[in-house]
Amino acid sequence: MLHRIKQVFAALTASITPKDREFIEQHLSSEAQKLFWGMNVPDQRHVLNVAYTALHLADNHSNVNSKLLVKCALLHDVGKVKGDVSTVDKIITVIGDYFFPNQLRKWGKQGRGSKVANLRHAFYIYFHHAAISASMLREIGESSEMIEIIAKHHKTPAENDPLELTLLRESDSMH
Image (tube, rainbow, N blue to C red; front, side):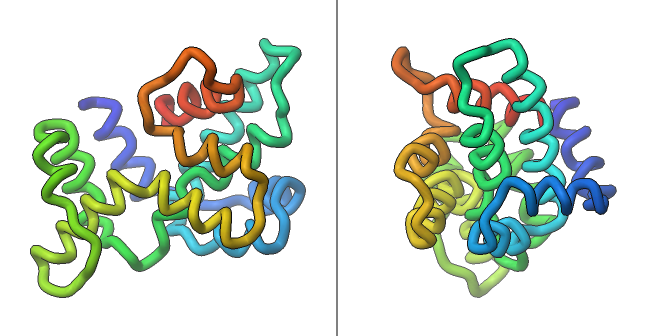
């Protein structure tokens, strides 16, 4: 739970530096950059931290596709679109997932409206953002390899997972 508290603090203090902007421009196409900039600043900061950590972890592996890994790291959460879920609802989803993950996965429902509907929508996004992200990337023509990695980044690891997926998961769990 301490890790989650640190995440909330990081989200509340998140910012993007000029160096980060250069990194994004270097690694993402203009279409992918639109999706990146469509996230909230805390989500942008999170995926940048994941990307930097993933690159560091990749140093220990000679057979990793670093370009693919960085793109996956930068885009794995684009399904969390700016303005779609409030900061308070995001905090509630993280806490709720810690205590009642199975019940809230079933309770979450796409669609906004009332306060309850918005909260249900927040849980839907929280639990389904990987598939939403993959769909958005499919729409802009990203590679099937990247789409598959992003779609699976919250699924249970399998024996035949690509190294890039393994490193993405490890990096994501650290931030």
